Image 1: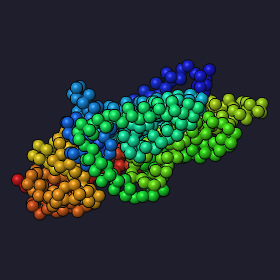
Image 2: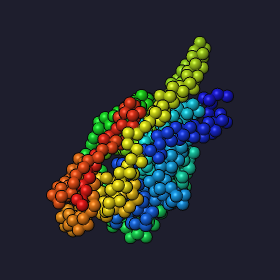
Image 3: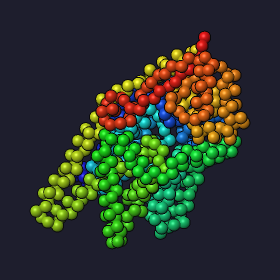
Image 4: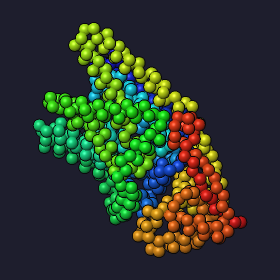
Length: 517
């Protein structure tokens, strides 16, 4: 029995070993070293507000469904019982998700291709993306949750479990709205696979959806937050989500930039999707229901690929939007390798002289895991962030020790000090300016009045932030005699492999306005 045998009894143990090895590798990016910043900081702050008992929609400008902050707050609560800081506990949860993702993609690819080695390749490829590693050790992002829920949905579809498929598929858009793609894909595959018992199948799927909805419905009802939820979701998120509609090439350009070091994996995944699309047309014509777009054996991966390509082509917002697509890339890269071996094996069966070539191809597939792992995972062991979490904490402690600090676009100030923000709007931009005037009587003028009344010891503004409110605050602070200084730090994982190894990436400047003594 070989590693390419789908009946290999060692496969579950290999999957567990793979997942553990991948999580241990990603741990090298440094749970205690990786800096806090960007959207990850904002979602950590939301979790802190849940833990603190605040209504997230009344006290923030959250434009997402509540499931992500609720889960983050729960993780922080568990960590608090072990004296783990709130900004660290979610990182351990992210590492657990990475472990689960490696195990799940291994299971999905193995089941879909009937080759254990394909599962190993898929797990390695998924864990090789530098940006993914950065998210694992820095946050518990809703899009990370979507990745895991997508994979759980795929496993449920492969094993024809409509209730589990409905549960996991419905939870995905409750973390991030565009993940409705997962729910629609799961529904299509479930209806196809259960078409002989449609009523029972659909009922079980619907029951899973209802159970998934309950926590969010209960939370919004208990907090009397339905109006705030609708206001935030449709007032803010719709404006930002569809700011640049129809961007068919933007997400491709960002993919090549964000995953420059893993471009070969991107190419392999794209080729896999293309080969599958061509091959499925022929097989579908011959009536093969197990190889088509709706085949349960493929776990909905073809539909998910089509869905995420369509969504990102219509409205792509930035690097994190690529995260839910990484399992699909890993799956089709492994599927392509397995398909090549299958084609060679078919030729070997038809032509006696090609049997040696068939065995050689299977051996190459097995050995391919070694250079793939070396190429994809070596960065984790060489990574040293240019800016560390400790440096951020020391800077913020210096500010908060002097008195009240107001931060706009610098969410890490509140996250790492574990303090509640004075205002619900942590970020100000042209979009948020417009919404501020809708929900706050007086808009920016009222905001200025409250800032003057507070007379903070320091105001921290992310440099380069556009918008009338934030620009005016900075101008008025300087006019009031506040002394301006600028500090810079680097958020890793923007760039190629050399940047990652140096811990370099996107430079972020904070303009700090200190009140004169």
